[in-house]
Image (tube, rainbow over all chains, first blue to last red; front, side):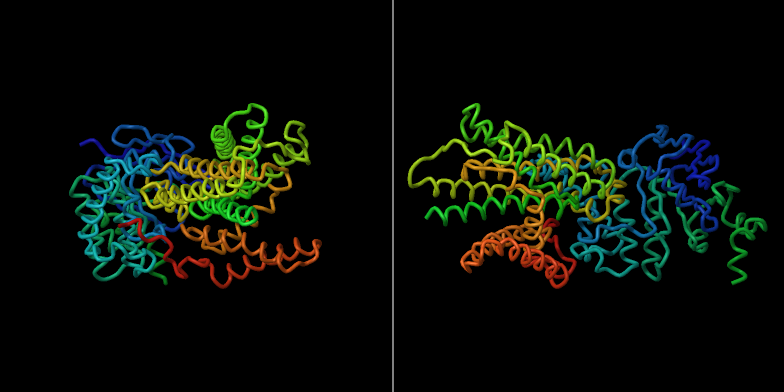
Length: 256
Length: 292
């Protein structure tokens, strides 16, 4: 099957600091790929390069066969890159539902003229997005929070709302930046179930996560990154068994 | 009668200015101090057209709006691309530079300004007619902004204000959103300018100084930033207040200072004690309604 995302020879450095050092990576539809490695390995930088927060110095980023490396941030979202943020970046003065309604990648109702005139297609788009948003919230058992101001929710639920907003983009690529940091109990299970279902529905998912348990629970494969390089790709067990990688990353944790 | 009409018209025009400034800085989060210059552009353009081309008042005022919009787009395209802080500095330079230009050009009348703006309505009812026109214009502007900010476009604007990066990463082109609200707000200031020129029949650079953006900002902050009713309440209070000060019969040299003191004290007090303004909510809830 053709990969959803294919990265070839991607390079990026800020001054002397190399955050992406000739990276090659593919993610297939339905795959949940874990991205692990020590702090500063370039994991979030890689997300920023894929989603367009920063432009690459060189290399190709193909989304379903289309090179998106030269596109701006918002055009890549429209091309089908959905992502979440480590610190969520929710719209803090807005309700949960309003946050989700910002998610669809193409939204005709937001044209100024159409919006003011309240044309029929605006109302239809609004209704469709509304239904989609409520559907996603129901899958997360969060429908009752729809009209709450998003920052009034508990942290774990806000993390789920961050995922929900990204899911409003029906693109094929989903990038999750530390979805589990600070998430526990039933929210943890919900997150796991929803991400799993999205992959099963054909999305390619890439997860940056420090919680190795979650990576093990969820990911079929993982890559290990350090100093802007991808050192190895394999199953999570293979990576965690590797002595060299363990020293690079997990060794520090064992000492603590 | 003429005095009351003048006050009501001033309130209506400042409602337009405050509401449109609120659109730009309150909803859009775009920090500009150049609002008075767009007020001036509307006033000067329509006055000059009225004086030299003899065109009817509505045409001149529409042209004034068009000039304000065009110039705002030029300013927006050149500065918004970079980042918010640059806009503040660029807008300050723009405000000062353009006003200096108006102050020194011959066809704008220089420091003396323009005093021969044609009189469209004669007779006793002139004041009343302008009251009706200005109140209608203010209502239309407030309605348009309310309507825009409570629809899907307004949601995108508020999302952008809350978090630009997240908003762009959801597929929203921020530059076009910023240019649109900037143009809309500046066009409204141009409308206020045209009406001002036609009613008072006299305009000069003194009336559009950068300090006026402090006055308009005071209205927005005092009334409630990012709300529909806030600028209305703010304009009412802050136009009526100086009129009340006039009744105190202070010496002329003191009036300006006292007004300045009151404005700045009010802004500081409100920012600390009631950041939501008179009509705003005190907590994080500033934007209900749009979800329903």
